[in-house]
Image (cartoon, rainbow, N blue to C red; front, top):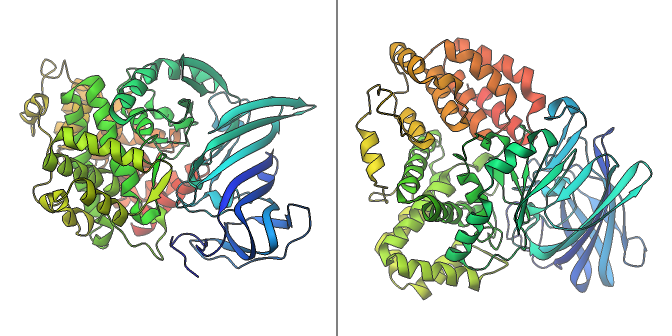
Length: 584
């Protein structure tokens, strides 16, 4: 037995799945999916096949001829869930598992009509990264093993089902509708994605459209209007786009991430709808994943930086191509500051600030942080500096082309670098990034005229004339540089002059509220309380709840708010906030 992924029961001596055929009926009343999953194996086999499941009620397992197969669902382990072991008879190449999901499936969030923008119909969406696909489908839930799939979702007739796959057709039958999709390219299981709700769409360009609730659609279409320009810029940098379409789905507020790079249908938080396109770098990030992550994938969560570090690097190259070096430098500096703050939270677990992690017995959701994103970006910037941009760009295209639709470990990546760029890893001291905690000495630092100009206002309250040309990124950076305990007089002056508590840009607002709450500035409390009830994005929940619990009064307020709002948050986000409150 050899389990190469510490977060999966899959055994590399067992047959691998080649294709999934999935049929599911969405039951909003019971909050369950009634489903069957047909797994086609790469080759006929006999003996055990271990699949990952989490809280699935397995009813039966049969072979391709409909004959029962012996199976056993083991007791659950805290992180992995339950192993489903199926005994295959000689010659079996296909098996079908009939089952239903749990109302508390960790990948699914069921929303009442009141929790949607329109308030008229329920909504369901999935979020399978990192190891939550197993709560929806019994499979080998590891990014090491890719699958193609076809799916059939049965939903209430008045709703639409969308999937991160190619649309095949819709058939209405009485009170229900059947929506069919197909994914011809092989994907890691965490990219299985779907949503069901009252949805409408609008074309953005020849290869892209935006989906959203009707009440949000026009705002979303205006905000994401530049997506085709992003797509062309990305192809110029990284090579042809391999997924045919790049559609976007604007999610309900409870979506726990800024975006999720599901191929053909990226999920995006509505907090990006600032009205001025100032937060569309998140779209660039998710687009970049079409190459770095979706096309070339990390083999397990222990190598997550190969996904996110590459994607942050690619995102900033897209931003630079579209909006200029100054803007890219602002984003890099914000990222560096966020990384430095993150490192403070891992003082007791410094090994989790290395890029190459060892996560046996560690929940990948617990290990999740900005480290693989921003330290991974610094690694690639240092490598670029070591060999020069032209050589690095050639290497990057070679890397992506060579490993299309494959999954890699850190060791496989460094071996490839040594073959293509001999001596470069030693020159940049790669081990300082991969195997040692913290930020290496001499890690790249962004420079630009706008950054230099902004630095002059550190510790000062600028005038309205000083900030007339500031972008939201500059405001964010200025606020991040305020002392953690800023005098209330300074906070009052800033808010009276610039109305930061009423900012429509979520990044600026959360940065401001975090400082204000930590500094005990009472006027920030009401806006923070309402905001925490409006959003479910963990990037915002964590700092705001974290700021609240720094005082005895704030702890009581935080616990009351969580009690009021917990049902609005995705299960992943609820767990993250609970962890903050438990540590307080």
